[in-house]
Length: 177
Image (cartoon, rainbow, N blue to C red; front, top):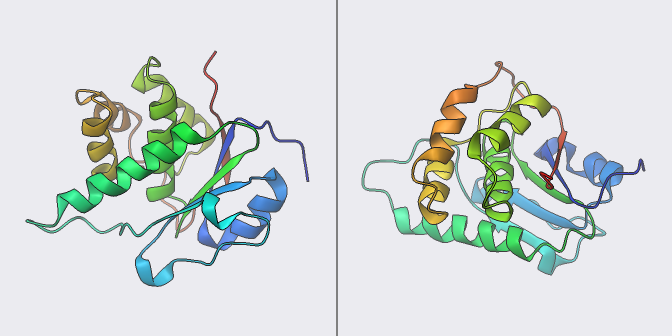
């Protein structure tokens, strides 16, 4: 295992969970996939430190339950804020392109409330040319974090990323000093 700073958020696809865990030494895990695809907690991760969010990547239907999304994004924000930065944290979705980059963006915004949204968004783009953060997740977090539309605007500014079937794993430093 290479040395990865303890304040690192690693992002990957579902297929790359095990090798990214081995590479980073992450001790916390966020899984954001459709409910029927939710993976078991990997060996080496305390089940209490595995946040499971059954969020689909499909556009929400009109009249869908927004309270469920708000609740899950609230759980993600609390999970990020409770992270002691003593070991890396891994977040994954099915492809590593949409939901996991959105979750990493949301977590960085939650733990860095004074950092401009564009700086966070550009850090994601710098580390992944394919990341296309899930807009419904970002929009919900924008409301929860009272970012006044700036979280969404920053994602629109960096654009959707290069087309890909699967994102390559990437690392984000949580510290913006």
